[in-house]
Amino acid sequence: MQQIKNFINGEFVAPQNGRYLDNFNPATGLVYSQLADSEAIDVVMAFKAAHKAFESWSKTPVQERANILLKIADIIERRRQEFAEAESLDMGKPLWLASEVDMPRAILNFRFFANRILQFQEKSSDMDGQAINYSRHEPIGVTGLIAPWNLPLYLMTWKIAPSLAVGNTAVCKPSELSPMTASMLGEVFNEAGLPPGVCNIVQGRGETVGDSIVTHPGIPLISFTGGTDTGAIILQKAGKMFKKMGMELGGKNANIIFKDAELDKCIETTLRSSFLNSGQVCLCGSRIFVQQEIYNEFMDRFVQATKNIKVGDPRDKNNFMGPVVSKEQKEKVLAAIAQAKQEGGKILAGEESLELPEANQQGYFVRPTIIDDLTDCSDLWQKEIFGPVVTVRPFKYKHDAIKWANNTSFGLSASVWTRDLKTAHSVAQELKVGTVWVNAWSKRDLRVNFGGYKESGLGREGGDDSINFYTEQKNICISY
Ligand code: NAD
Image 1 (cartoon, helix red, strand yellow):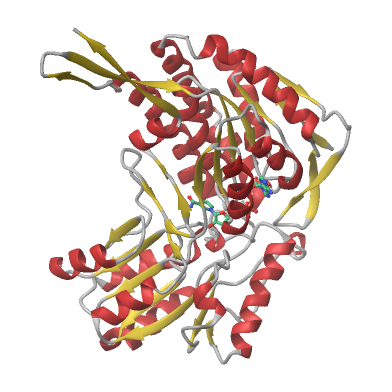
Image 2 (spheres, rainbow, N blue to C red):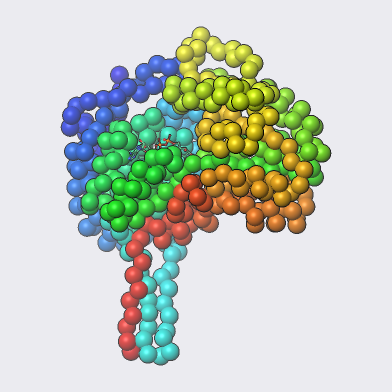
């Protein structure tokens, strides 16, 4: 059985303790590979390699660094199908989705930051003829990059690309639930000529590997994407050490649909914003508010379309949804649905039987589920489930929709559906979230920042915000 090792100093190495964890295929429930169950000692080895490599990588001309990042992008593009298949097998994402969305975005991450760093210009200003100020964005050192399982390669490379582009080195930790494609990156780095030690990947659990990265005194920056509870633990530990931290956390995003919405496009997009990747996208719109004049029409069509969603083997291109990522995640989702029922929620879709091929019967499949009639204070309106479950509710007035949308401790993103420009602007401005899409969902722009408010995180990733985050800014004032 394949053993996924660590990638340290340009080589694949076994964990020092020799132990491995089972890695499950979510579509079958069977163990299909193993990953290193690394510990602090492995993180220390990776740190040493990254620390040594920083000396020369941080001084490598920008053009040379950019060229290597562009080569990395080219190699992933050449191996795109292989990467997509690995990601689909590893975390249950439909193959078409991995191939059409995740891999292109991972490739784009390297291309975007390679080009951005070449164009990046430092600022200078004259002080009334007495002195000149100029600023420098200097690399910080060894960065600790921790990623979740839902968009494994895409989110990991969204951290690696800007960090390396500005001259940092890295110790990366992929999720133990989706280690495969990050491991394959090691091969790509070597082929692209990335010097050994610049980017190291340590596999294993959060409490061991993740914690060792977070608390390592030589790692001054932590970029974390994951759950809000984990984020809180990391903030407490790394905050005490005055580390620079980027936290991209959970979402419980609102999807507000006004009576003048273009319904065909809205329903098609709402299916994606609700159930893409089995609802395991931080930006999924899991709380749907529909203006009462169109509530019945919208629900009739949305419920029917949801019942028609094909769920099954992620390799079958006819299936829109695969399984959720793990047995625990499936149990968590089913428990949330059971609780909703107990609280009086009405299940409008989700209880149809799931016909699966024999090979997939032990897989972690859940039907896309729509729940109506829950009170505002129910857990399902408040807590992130991170599965294919949405709650729906009618609203009469715009101010009610805004109030309910903001009534959450999360603040990642929202969608607004209306043909009225005034409504679009006013609602977008009132929503307490980092990103608002109008008549769209999840169209990400690499050039501008987005992020969250409140429990959805601190810090912003994307464009020059990433350049700023991964560098230390220094002002130098020279007197004439
Ligand atoms: P998670 O918090 O369980 O794990 C994320 C990563 O942190 C994993 O690599 C894990 O091993 C590691 N980790 C766990 N405990 C740790 C610890 N004590 N110290 C250091 N590292 C630790 O999250 P998940 O279940 O992998 O991902 C799902 C969550 O991620 C959801 O809440 C989702 O909303 C969020 N997410 C947010 C964004 C965003 O951009 N805001 C994007 C994707 C996912």
